[in-house]
Image (cartoon, rainbow, N blue to C red; front, side, top):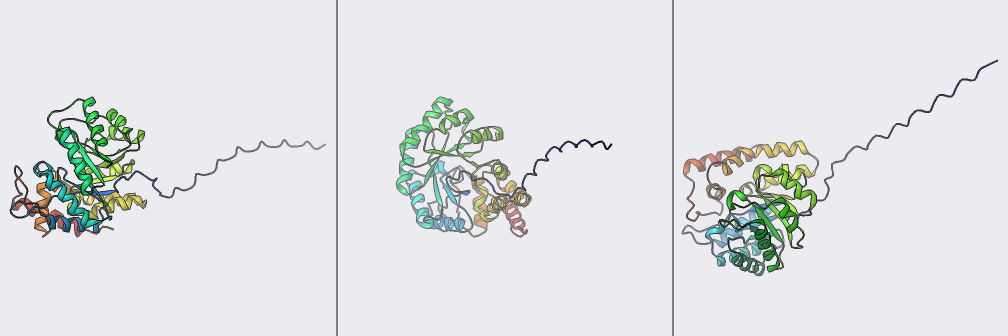
Length: 324
């Protein structure tokens, strides 16, 4: 008699392998584009506003890959330009770039009433948005700070980019304050110079705010966790090289993006960590390259020849280094 063999148990189904991931970054907020330059404000040799120079520089920056230009920020010497000059600058740059790039006008001051006036003037002059820094020196508490930003957002029809740079203003825009401000329909973006990567990610994960790195060394890091891009001073001189970092990341070439970011660090350090303001180093290098810049206004002082030579050497090493 033949004994039937027991039927072996069916093997546990092997779960299918996860499909190979094709690099395809999720859409991210880009209220004003990805690659934004904090543009210097060109002056003539006598220190007057150089509108022709501003048009030439703006056209060069946009042609080299800038999606947007931030005017009259710290790099644009906003503390020493008049209200009239700020409006004239917006109008001239608008004329030069047309609809090829967004224009964000810096309107932040230590006075809420003055900031409201500048926001309305920027809208009239043709800006696409306003950059609003925390009121400096008076160091308002968070409740007052929130009220200030809401008043500015209500003052015009322009979208608002908050500027969080406590190292200059003395006041942090706390993450919880950001979360509340994100509820306002015209507060759409942040320029982050807080050096609080955890706080930035907290706000990123809970809001639709477009987060822009305002610190040059954070461009790729913030972008990799969902940031919208950057607002860069160094872009005044190498707009194409900085944009290439984002382009490589978006193409899924993350190692290449890291290499390109690292290649730029010598110039970044020379311009932003030399002990001189970025305005001074950017204008010194632009002038040495024969590009519109002109002098800085007091209390700033121009870079000396030795500093400019060092900047030029770092620049030459970067631009002659293969980007691929």
